[in-house]
Amino acid sequence: MQTMTENILDVTLLKPGEKHPEIFKRFDALVEGDHVTIFNDHDPKPLYYQLLGERGNVFKWEYLEQGPEWWKVRITKRMKNDIDETLGQIAAKDVRKAQIFKKYGLDFCCGGKKTVKEACSEKGLDVAKIEHELQQSDQLTYSRPIPFGDWSIDFLADYIVNTHHSYVRKMLPDLLAYSEKVMKAHGSQHPELIQITQLIFEVNDELTAHMIKEEKVLFPYIKELVKAGSNGSSWHAMQLGTIQNPINMMEMEHELVGSNLAALRELSNNYSLPEDACASYRLLYKMLDEFEEDLHLHIHLENNILFPKALELERLSAN
Image (cartoon, rainbow, N blue to C red; front, side, top):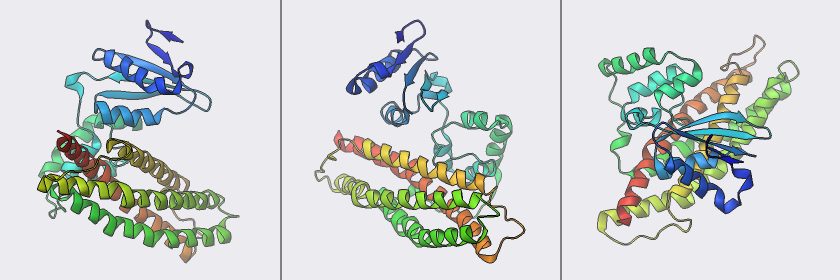
């Protein structure tokens, strides 16, 4: 089903190798403000990351239908004067603004590719009010924040491993142990603990594999880029092509973990304790709250600072 009058593309009718090239062709042919709607039999989220990586933040992605059988997505080419900074870009420049996003539950790490307008629209928030608070934040005084954006990216990669990866590896065994303990003791009265425990096990599996890929593949390549840039030596392109490919994968995995953390918060009613909560119950929810806080910063440093700088460095090295 391909009707140019409606500009709908049914990608289920295309061969696997033709799908993304045809979608890119349709998108590139759009004039500003126009859109193409794609129809698929699975979530085309990988396309979102590829489009973002190869074209930049020049489109709006809207789900019109989200499964379970069919997915329909409208992709609109933004007007040039409507390309605002994303939540992630704003947070990377000023940690005070990140605190405002956190106050209103606006995800600046996993969901940091959205503009303030888009994020507020999705949550039904008053964008004018939040924009005003962002402007007022410039007048607030904070202790000097850690200048993550000023660091070299090889140093930042080491910091992420030594600080955040170490923290995750330290906390996950305790979270697994306490979630099982609390579920066995209170699961009959609070059945949500069963789902909470399952999600914690999923987060454990996701993050354990994820961190290994970063430490063994992506971060060493970033260090090689930095070394080549500093001394003019040659560097070896990744076997998978551009660094954009593993970055896309890491960001998708970040989003998956982020959605599981959001589900944990929803199931626990923002980690609200019941009246019969024991000491282990209280400790579990305290650890989960702290774990989420650390992971948001962890993912913010990668998605909004490390990855964009690594992409730019690879582009410059290739010229």
